[in-house]
Structure formats: C-alpha cells, structure tokens
Amino acid sequence: MAQNKVQFGYRRHPDQDRPGTSPAEHAVVVVGAGPVGLSLAIDLAQRGQKVVLLDDADRIGEGSRAICFSKRALEFWDRLGVGERMVDKGVVWNVGKIFHGDSLLYQFNLLPEQGHKRPAFINLQQFYAEAYLVDRVVQLPDIDLRWRNKVSALERRNDYVALTVETPEGPYRLHARYVIACDGARSSLRQMVGAEFSGQVFEDQFLIADVKMTAAFPTERWFWFDPPFHAGRSALLHKQPDDVWRIDLQLNPDADPAVEKRPENVAPRIARMLGHEQFDFEWISLYKFQCRRMDRFVHGRVIFAGDSAHQVSPFGARGANSGLEDAENIAWKLDRVLRGASPESLLETYHIERSAAADENIRESTRSTDFMAPATEQEARLRRAVLSLAKETEFGKRMVNGGRLSLPSVYDTPLSTPDADDWRGGPRPGTSMPDAPVADPSGNPMFLTDAFKGTRFALLTFGNGRALEAPEGVGTIRVGGADGLVDVEGLAGERYDADGGATYLLRPDGYVAARFRQPSRAAIDAALARACGLN
Image (cartoon, rainbow, N blue to C red; front, side, top):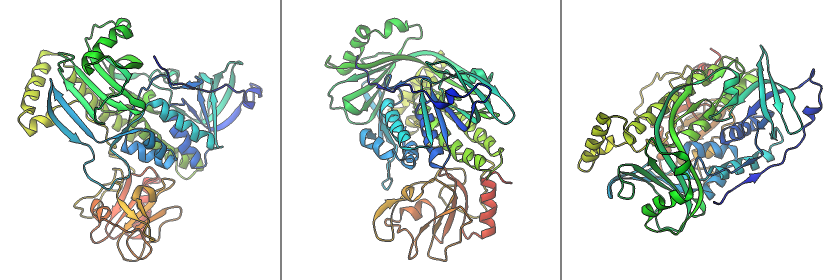
C-alpha cells in the first residue's frame, strides 16, 4: 500500500544542556503536533506568545485519518494563514445523499445559500492538513517545534508544571506556566494527571479503506443503509484529493480485526461495491465507535484539548472539527491570562463551553450510532420503520440518521450578555458570526470573515449614523456609511437583522458576546468586561 510520509529530524535543543536543578522556563508548552496542537500553537504565536511544541514522533502522514473539515474549521484556518492552501488542495462539497438498498432516500445541501467565502466542508487527508500547518509553524519564530521529544513525567505545582522530556539523547526537564495536552485519544498526559474517560465504547466495528482509482462519482457524501453490495450493514463513500476515495464498511461486532484488515480480504468487498477491481489501496484500518470525554478539561495548569479530552464516532465529522474549536477557544483566553488582562478564572470558561460542546457531540454521535448499528431488536425495528417512512414522507426523512454533520457549537456561557432588545433574527450571543459578501470602500469584493482578523475583540456595526467609539484594544468593522464596508447584496444586513442599525461585540474567536440596537459606551464596556471574565 502507498504511504504518504513527511519525516522530520530530531535536533538537540539548548534546554537539554541546562543543569537539572535549573530547568528552562516557558510560558506555554503544547504537547502533540497534530491538527489541534499545531493550530493552537499558531494561534498563540500570532497573538505574540512564545510556544514550545513537543511531539514524540518525527513524522506525519500515517494514513489519511480525519478527512472532513468544516466551514468553521476553514474560517479558523483562514485566520491562521493556511485556509486558502487547504481549500485549494481539498475536495469541496456541500451535498450529501442517503440510500436505502439501491434507492435514493433523499439528499441534503449543507450550505444551500450563496454568499459565503468557504464551503460547508472540504475533504482533505489529515497528512496534508498537518504538513501545511507545519509549514506555517516554521514561518513563526515564536514557535519552537521539537520532534522526538516525549513527555514522560509531569508534576503539577502551584505556579508552574514540571515536565520530564525523553529524547534520543536522554531526558531533560522543563518548567511551564501552562501545559496544553493535545496528545490524542491515548493521551499519556491524561494518565499523568489521574484523569480518565467516561462514556461508552460500541461493539460494532467499521473498516476504513482509502483506495486510489479513477471514478466518475460526484463530489458528494454518499451513505447507504443495507446496500446490495454489503447486505445488512451500512457503507459510506467520500472523495479525497489525488483520486483517492474513502470507503467505510460496517462489520459484524465479532469480526476478527487482524483478518479483516488483510488486503486480500478487503479487496473483494471493495470490488463488490465499485463493480470493478481497478483500484489500489492507500490505507486500511479498523475502528470501533467511542463516545467518551474527561470529566474536566482543565486540571490546574494542565489543559486538555481535542481527542485527549473527548472522543466521538467519525460519522458526522465531529472529532477533528471539535478539536479545532477547542484550540480557537483556549488560545485567546490563555493569551489574555498570560498578559495579565484577564484573571485565571477565564480559563474555567474553556471547560464550561467546550465540555458542553463535547456533550452535544457525544449525544449526536450516540444517536447516529444507535441508528446505524442498532444494538437491540427494538432499535432495529425502529430503524426499519423510519427507513420505510422516509421513502414517502418528509418527517420520515428527517428521522434518518446517517451521521449528523458537524456544525459550529453554540455556547450557553457566563461570558455572553443576554439580549435586552428585540431581534427577529441574526446570531444571538453564544453563536458564531455568519459570513456575508461585502466590498471595501474602494469597491473591492471581500467577505465579513476577511474583515474579522480574530486577533482581538471587535465591534461590528451596521448603519449610516455616527460610529460608536470602540473601547481601547477593540477593533471596529463598520458596514455602511461613507467609509464603511459596502453590503453589496444586502446579505450582511439580512443575516445580522440590521434593519434600523445593529452593533455586535465579537469575541476573538468570532463568537458573539453581545448585541445591541442602539448601544451606549457604558453598555459596550460592561459587555466587554463580562466577555473578558472581569465581572
């Protein structure tokens, strides 16, 4: 099978030459150079923080792994300077189709409206995403990326964390004000702080095969219940770059993983699905559903993000995308704490917001699992009834669950200021900012997400009246007026319910902290203080 590998060399660092009684001290150490750890390090560095990034391997590219990256993830990566590269290489898709047997039950469009910079999803092998993120890391002098540096011990102190790091040349010690654990589902740091997962592991097994072939299938997500080529089970098909296709096949719970993974046993299954044998294997793997999370994501000065904090089934693309939301959530908060602009208690809101998001993802993933792999006769009977209804009724189609696709999280959070005005629509506090096409004052086309840089809080204002003076350190995005952005299609005003004027206070991660019809400076100051954890 073909392998896509990017390998990096180990380099000795001056920290290793310091005496054990006087270890180097760093503000932030991120453990794990996957998509979450790399993105977090970049975000912090772009805010001016110095980051040490440790990874126990020396390469990326062991199979494609995560492939579906959401619109929200792409907007985050745009702010990190890698979004364009991801989209240019990725396979763009918005449409999904659900089949029962060989019949189409229904199809859906995840982004039917126009006027967004990014699509609902791209498919891109994880090794490409990681390689592009590493390239960006290399451009940022404030990130010190150390390969083949494995954390072997961790001691939590009152004002720092002591780490022991193993290398090919022996161990050394580091002190960090904060450690962010992005070291994956088998997180060793999770064990070091004495925390475990709680949740459910499902017995049904799924075979993943990435095959290289030339095919005329459209760039859509196709999901089958009880297909003729895989009777009694489910299947999934996705297109990836380089003429590679991701195929997921449900197996029996008692299937032998070692036997099922053999290429000579996988090939007949794929041939039945495709109707031909003209393909080559890129990657083969087996997995079981897991829907679990840590009880707490913040353990003093050790903070967990991504798969180290929570796991969900891959159906719905909630794993990597939720991990990237973890990264953008913690980055701006940790930056403020390190600068002394917010108290350490602000970090607790990371746990509040992201653990609630993990619970939502787990609920959706569990529902998907129960529908796709019913464990009881009652669940199987319900699925048969729903699939039968879906052929004839709209409400039946809505009940079919082939993996609810990832959407931006919605936060019920103490950082949000409740609405005091009447709104017919628009993003409420705790939701992410919607995109819309605009033009700069010179008429050059752009998007609202381009105008929002994500480096600080921002006031997004609509209308032709006098611009409200923003508090110190808060940016401004003005739509309308002589010097403002032009709402070229009227979609910005429509999506923000801006008839008669509106002002939104946006957090550095693009979430709405507060909104006002006719704000006063005092109201803005109070909402900003609340969003910064200052009251």
